[in-house]
Length: 175
Image (cartoon, rainbow, N blue to C red; front, side, top):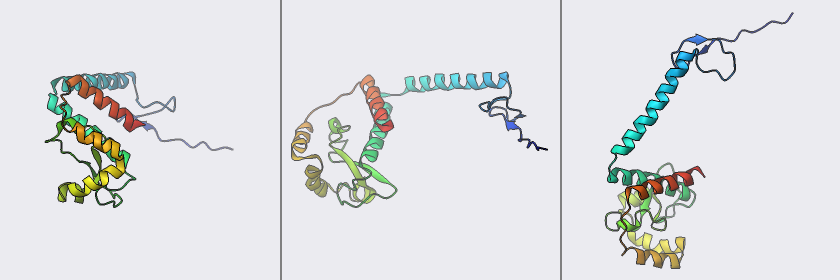
């Protein structure tokens, strides 16, 4: 005679009540819990819209910088530090050759930003002389010369352009 093993009841993801699943995909015990989950999702989306609407241009720029730097770290994770050439360990920075404060037009220029170990970027203040020597070998002399010319330019991004930049780098991060 076959013995049936009775599975323990599932726990509702919303209220924590034990219940019997009718389908393997069931996560909630009742329709009222499903409605509550839907309300929370709608509220979360509305709240995010309110937060986005209240953000200043500077806050959007900072968010774009975080997404951009994350992309640079992912792009350069196997290349090693631009200045000392040591392989990266756990944490490393997206180091700018031309600083954001002095050259804001190059803030989101991929040729201007490369993976740099914390020791070189933060403790060595960017190691600018080594960066200057090694950058042309990493990006090529032509692109290096273009970068030198672009440092004189002015870039003023609108809020819409900043949001688009965020979306572009989020898509690149997914790929």
